[in-house]
Length: 518
Image 1 (tube, one colour):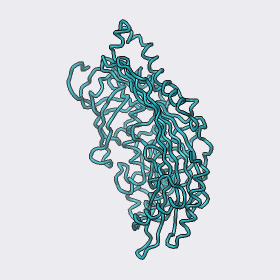
Image 2 (cartoon, rainbow, N blue to C red):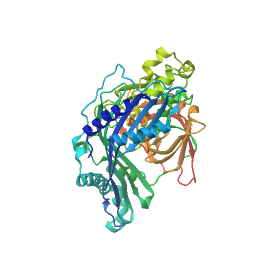
Image 3 (cartoon, one colour):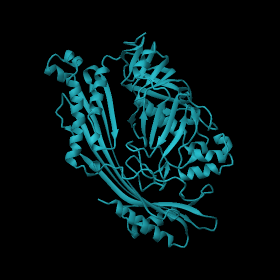
Image 4 (cartoon, rainbow, N blue to C red):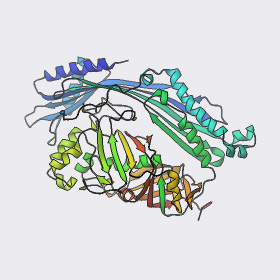
């Protein structure tokens, strides 16, 4: 496998080749190797199955270059990439593509330059995850499946329904999902940072969905981590327990409810609505609901949200960005006040140079600088740090905290009539991100709250939430203190999500009225 040393040599030699070209004013060479290992989970009690499918893997390596070319009408900026070839021939082919794609960009200032921050995280990858073989990959898959099966077997509720092994099989117990391991290696060198920098990271995630088909009940579970020796069966057991708890789901009427959002909904709302709204590019494009509010209150005073790409042990941590700059902590909302934005080098430079900066941010350039440190220039493509893409702004670890953490049981006890929402799907802004309006469907792991207790499971797909994210942030009434790493579909970041209570959330009933609670 291509080593970190191989990547380092490739970017150093590539930079020397590029800087020898007379028309190149600035150059950057980025090389990456990504390996994605996956094993599928597929257990069915009533159909012959393997339980864990055969392990699979994908691997890609290559390089991407950015160049600033002299031209009669001013500098042109181009990007090109080449797979599988890290040598001079690969650099030349990538350069040909960059030349062909080069365009004028009046907002471009320069390729990234080093600042005052220094790298904080090195040697943090897990050798066990780098060295795992097919046998080990199958074993972690079975660990998740076994956890789910033990939870099913220990359920007195299922035992009462089944009344024997044959009837138990007829319940239709299903456990599906996957375990994924990502191994990443990168190197980067540029005109302004000629000494090559390298980084190596690993992570492991598991997702599980469990079903009791006879009762049309479904539950889910997930885990994230950075070490093989810390990996557990939790995703499987959590999914099975949630499926059992979802049996005999009830419906509720359209109305405004106090809602406790579980970790997955918190992560989904952040991924689809909040994180896009606190990117510097959204402010430049005037497409954020927080436009002009840097330094102003945008959420309940008890809420703090920050991104931390250099925290040891967090799943999304990296040593450096894909621009060669240090990762670190960026406070986004502190005590309800918007104090910082996620940014890459390009977005920081063009926003600071924007004549409409005061209108877009609500503050002057000299005051905005500390809020726009470019710690988030990554090249994510869903399967690692891609050499085929130029950098763009992406979060790493989004951490959510409350000023006065409250246990979930205490949050539930405060609610006379409400909902616990454990899983949502198809969350997206309507009327444009800047308006803050959104919709999503509640698909499982949810309950009706009555008189301070979980009174009944909420039927899956029986309600949609239609509300406004700025209103939700301002009406938070409680936050638990047990944040856990949570990943949602197609997300770049990992959200360390607690459970959050919000007053007056608007819910619309979907479908029939059978089994509806008053």
